[in-house]
Amino acid sequence: MKVLLWLAMAYYGGHDGLEPTDRLIPAGWVGNPWGPAATAARKSGEIPPIPDTPSMKQWDQWARKVLRTGDILFRRGDARIMGGTFPFSRFLANVTGSQFSHIGTVVIEDGEPVVYDTTKSSVRRQPLKIWILDNAGPFGVKRLKAAYRDRIPKVVEYLYAMYAKQVPFDYELSTDDRELYCVEMAEKAFRHAGLTLSEPVLLADMENIQQFPLCVLGFTSFTSLKLDQAVFFPGNDRHGIWSSSYLETVYMAPAPPPSQTTKPKPTEARPAAPQPKQKSVADRAGVAPRN
Image 1 (tube, rainbow, N blue to C red):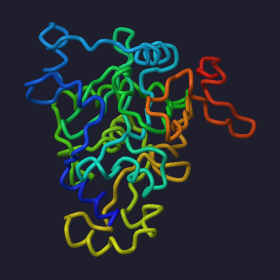
Image 2: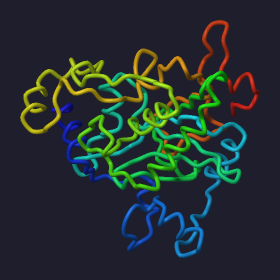
Image 3: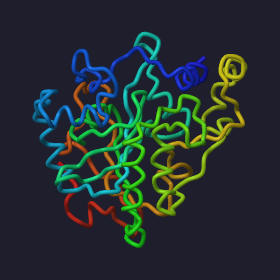
Image 4: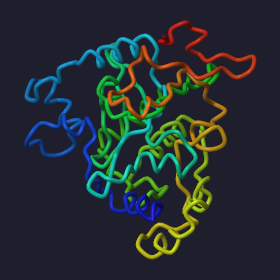
């Protein structure tokens, strides 16, 4: 029943387990807690600032050194359903053959790295030091190769427009523009700039769906999603945005050990092993945190 549970989550959109940033929402706040109104309220002092933890300060310092506008962030969260007992994010990554379940795009604003993504609350703007709190697994950063970085202003233009409009979250995972899910918004931001990072994958072609054959009946019976429906995914080296030839790897951190309950810190994470005769951007720049 695992695929059915994943599809039910995608279709109905609810999950019972709270992620760390869900616990930072001000009591009584109505609407997107990371949307334009909430951002204005934080600037005016109506919403009090969130105190930095030592880990948040580390991430902020690292991000200011390493990240650039237009960087794409990949993470695996810990969103859960079924009363918090079913690890939806981990399953989503596993069924698609990916290390990741979520994507956001960086914009440097007044020197601060902020991340634009979309979740059930609609399009969000979060400082990187807050966005990273919801990471519970591998974390990676991709960047446009130098020849294409002149497209970044158009990417930002799209993100700002979707944020201002507060486009609803797309629970049906459609590819039209009425609603957006996280990978779809990132993909369309770069397509707005003339770059197709990836093509959607049929749900029937998810790399590991054959491990769950008993779920097909439930899949077709209890949701409006279909196996011949195409969906954008974070991906891996073979498909999805991660595989795009327009991108290069800036940073890659593995998942923390199962016994480790704290989020991985920049100084604890290691860059991805370089490909033969090739190093990551972070290695070449000499800025990747390492032990």
